Image (cartoon, rainbow, N blue to C red; front, side, top):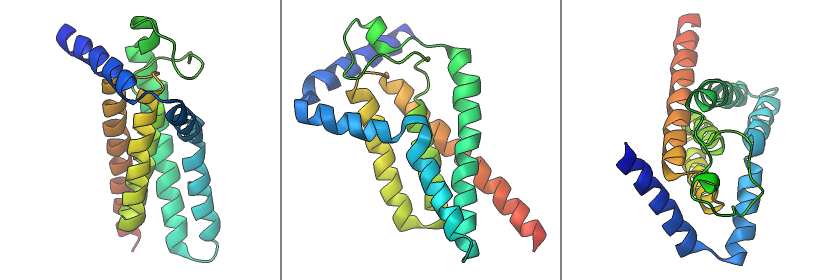
Length: 181
């Protein structure tokens, strides 16, 4: 385990050194800010629900995105972050992050988990949009590394967690929908 933690830190420092640039600083701040509290994904889910007033398929899309985000929030922010309580990398590796320090634990990345939960829900109902959402989710995860607020394993595990939570929601939703037919 010690080996993994050491490599995690080395990879993060390499990423910071390799990609650091003032223009990227601004881009990554902006991208990451879109994921604060999952707001971009919540807005997309609500938009889908509003469009669902006229077409049922949009309502389903909205429910899947919002329920996936809710399940992910419980697993990530309510259970795992307090349970693991991993210190942020800038405290461990002693550097200044690109954005102001964050107060909650590092593991897993909530921005990344929410992004992958929403992307998975979107992909389940529209593959083309889902691919675009997955690309944005990956960029969101990279932004968290670039900004120096997460270790690579935080981001990878956040992506896995978000994907799994959304797949569970989709499975439950589809099972319920089939029984009602």
